[in-house]
Length: 238
Image 1 (cartoon, rainbow, N blue to C red):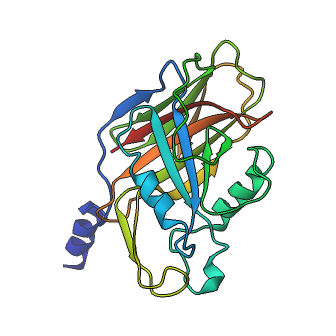
Image 2: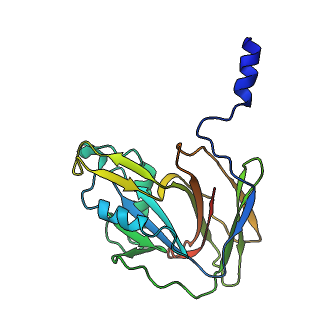
Image 3: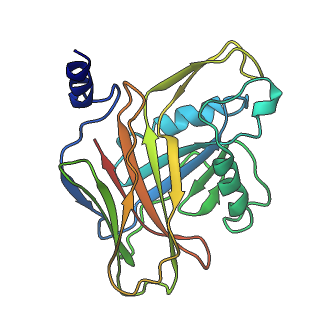
């Protein structure tokens, strides 16, 4: 009986694991608008920005990511989506993206600090990098990159796994008593080694189960290390 139970357990998928079809996604001819929101559940001025970001869902040529920072956590409410890695990412962008300091809510679009609720116009310039996602039947996820004419000598690539449809009932801090809704929440994030663009390259990206009821999307972004400008981005969902 013990052996039978063990075999059944091994054959049963883990609860909450995603079953995604094999597919390949390639970036387009131009660069989409990459919208990063730095936010926190402990920040009273952040919920309107969170709602604004949710309103971007489904807009063509827009890829969004909400990075929840952790420096509000000490004021009574620990944001369960926050990470010191996201705080560090925001700090590293100070000066490079045009901001003079880190703040919330902060919007960064294609590597530039953005102080407007209106998105910039879509770029018509040809992309200088091609990116692609490929997912095998076994669920393995790989990111590929290829330099195009005009690509810089050094490119930084980063990726993130995001989830939609999260809700939190805040019980302390500046948003005490509020119910907050979140989309495009970054749950995992990583930077790849600096890429010099000498021919096509490919990297494996770890795949983890999404929180039950929240399908994942993976986005990848290529950035010019000289000035932080976005060179290309691509997203794959499940």
